[in-house]
Amino acid sequence: MPILDAHSFEFISRSPEQTRRIGIRLGSSLQAGDVICLSGELGAGKTTLVQGIAQGWGSLDAVTSPTFVLVNNYRKTGGFEMNHFDAYRVQNALEAEDLDLTGMIADGPFLVEWAERVKSVLPEDHLWVNMKYLDEEQRSLLFIPHGKRFEQMIEKLRMNILKGLE
Ligand SMILES: Nc1ncnc2c1ncn2[C@@H]1O[C@H](COP(=O)(O)OP(=O)(O)O)[C@@H](O)[C@H]1O
Ligand SMILES: [Mg+2]
Image (cartoon, protein in one colour):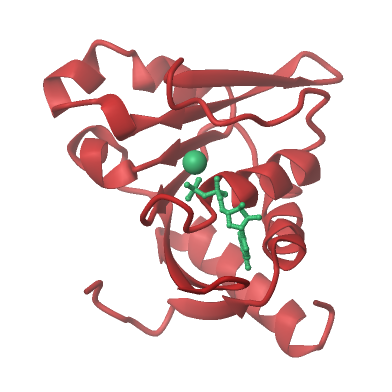
């Protein structure tokens, strides 16, 4: 169980569309250097959330699951890019080091599924999202921000949801 602190925020999503809408909100404020870590079992909704994040960021490319290719690269106008990494097949931190995560993080927002597998090579500042299957249509999304920037991002998300914008 993650340690719950004052900055963490849990949201129960009731549909894939709702998960995507949350993603859109997050994605719209992402920039190079931002790291979003997604954790949760197969079918928890990690890729679905990434679809929303990429849409909110302005991706011109469709999001697919990078389980077999490890990394998908998305572009938007202006030459900006975003990398979507699936660490499912990465066995250890050493293997992850070979992938030049630092370079990918510098290039644009960096989204990583199965982040717990490469935790030791990820930067201290990041947004951790624990996703959990509740039932067919419901997922729990627990946002755990690390660092001021993500604390503010999650506080804003929480306020928007409380104001009924979701
Ligand atoms: N509330 C929800 N949020 C996200 N996905 C949901 C939700 N309800 C049902 N689903 C479905 O669960 C599946 C999640 O798959 P996916 O996003 O690929 O998960 P993961 O990447 O964690 O394996 C999709 O088929 C999606 O339509
Ligand atoms: Mg996935």
